[in-house]
Amino acid sequence: MAENEITFEPDDRYNAFLTVCNRVSHGKGKLAGITVAVKDNISTKNIETTCASKILKGYVPPYDAHVVELIKKEGAAIVGKTNLDEFGMGTTTENSAFGPTLNPCDTTRVPGGSSGGSAAAIASGMVRMALGTDTGGSIRCPSAFCGIVGLKPTYGRVSRYGLIAYANSLEQIGPMARTVSDVSLLMQVIAGYDRRDSTSYNKPYTHTPKADIKGLKIGIPNEYFGEGVDPKVANVVKDALTQLEHLGATTVPCSIPSMEYALAAYYVICTSEASSNLARFDGVRYGPAADTKKSWHDSYQEVRRAGFGTEVRRRIMLGTFALSSGYYGKYYAKAQIARENVRKDFARIFSEVDVIVGPTMPTIAFKLGEKSDPLSMYLADILTVPVNLAGIPAISLPCGKVAGMPVGIQIMGKPFDDERVIDVAFAYEQAVK
Amino acid sequence: MVTEKDVEHIAELADIDIDKDELVTFTHQFNAILEYFDVLDRVHGKDAITRDLSNVMREDQVEPSLPQEEVLRNAAAQEDGFIKAPRVM
Image (cartoon, rainbow over the protein chains, first blue to last red):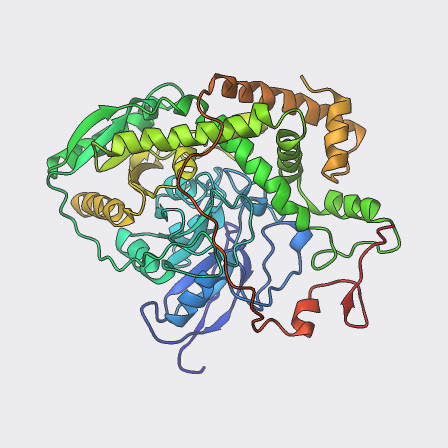
């Protein structure tokens, strides 16, 4: 075996991986030899990238995503591509065309989604770090359900170049790991300006976590502890808040009135963007062969019927409907105003507090098959989507258990204040260690 | 309320082929979801995003791109170095 080559032969009983790279060579750097898994909607040169969809089965990207270039340059060993809800559309990883991922804490339960494969690969110890993507909670939800740490960075801080788009205005690539220090280390490598993403912002992340939070002001939104949130989950998070107070933070109650319609606004916007983004999958430049003898319309319908799963087709249709003539004003235009109101609510609260804290998810991980109705599945995202609408950073880290399953505490920060979010998480993690 | 006919029309617009069984299920689900979306009727405010944002442009300069064989690698149907597509007319 050559120097700087590792062998990776995991016992993947959780179906966390869609592709495993058994022999991986790596260079030197901040991540030298560290095993990193990459969510399968992030392009990896010469490694199949499917988005967990039949429509991209066999697709081998001819280029790396910006984040993949960066982690390779720092010596990471990319050991595989992880499972997800098809194109990131889901909260459980059950919407994968290649079967669900199981939660390593309890294999009768889902790992959360859509970055469920990345979370399970970390929680089971198969890899040390992973890249996920977060459109409406897809890093934070599986982090909470599997008991690991995951950061959704401020919008614009990490380049989306090479991320196969689902809802561009909402999604960010972010780091996942078992510890806050590892999440911070991976963030150091992936954050920074990239001219190939026109929403990229030039603010590198060079931070090292600090555990001092004396004088920190924490806002506690009543909407995060009210109706729809399991009281047992709420109590575990409240205990964690008491712990943060012991470390020198003060808490003040606050309110996010726009939460009333944030989830509806999120689903209108993400499905609308999806209906546009996913129009590119036509079996011509990539994907299963389109029948070139048929008319464009017939061949296109055939490929998309066979290639897309039910949830993807549902979301494409919902988005097409929300943007269609006669309904645009009622849905899409209203959703944009709602989005602005969410952003204003956060700005108002952040003029008085440093971070906002609540549960990541309203419940512990669901049983496999438990959420069979799409609307009830969407409702589970209520506590994570406001962050994406506002573009702010948020981290989820474990803060206790209910019925033996992990509970995640969510720390939300001001735009471009990812460093503070990391520090608060680090302070808590060190205190309870 | 959307009808099965509406859903069929949307499926057509989105090039999502749909069969009769699915139509019943999708219509039922759409109505539940759209009823939930009605909460947006309570949203008030200006109808334009007033933030100070500007487009990000670059010079239209030719830069190195992927070689032709790399670009064609994932295309199922090819002819003479071109990607073959279904007929449009």
